[in-house]
Image 1 (cartoon, rainbow, N blue to C red):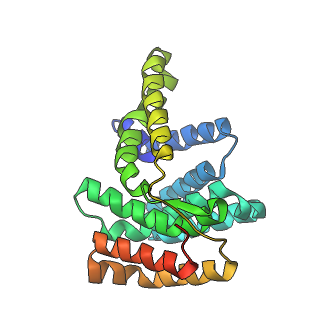
Image 2 (image 1 turned 90 degrees about the horizontal axis):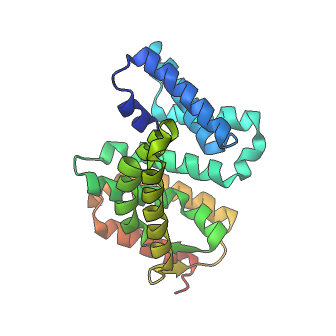
Length: 239
């Protein structure tokens, strides 16, 4: 969201652009009833602006952790909010995978999607008791489509109602794509209920193995398949 707004407002000097972005995100947060995921974006951006202005050299991961602390201090029950969990886990996965991203756009999407799935897997399994492996391939369509079509036109149509029809057209395409992939169940894998102990051990193993995954296998499809196979076998896979 911030990246898109930055590109749209590229002609404004950075200091004024940052202030305008904060105002726009505050307004958007109000519209969506201060969703935890949007609050995360807002707080992270404010901390990043302060970090850059005063040259504090705080890493992105620490900024994210500070944001989580502020939000949980404000409302401890956010820890039970699915939006909060997915938002932070996905953000952590993107930060940790950033140094492994290269110039190949679509291969980067696969890497980010894999990392996001890896970090959100326990939450997904706790909710649905299944995982759809087609997500890895679906995101090759969803991410570019959302980034370059749906999000920009949502902002344009909000400012210029004349483009509402075009935005609804792109939104209907997105809806049909989602319905299509939801019906594709041939790559859906069912799993039993997982315990808290398993989740703790799982994250410990993932965090301690990230560098090994990339150094040994260079994030090839082999490591993706092996990692998923070991994971599902370890929890008792149900095909």
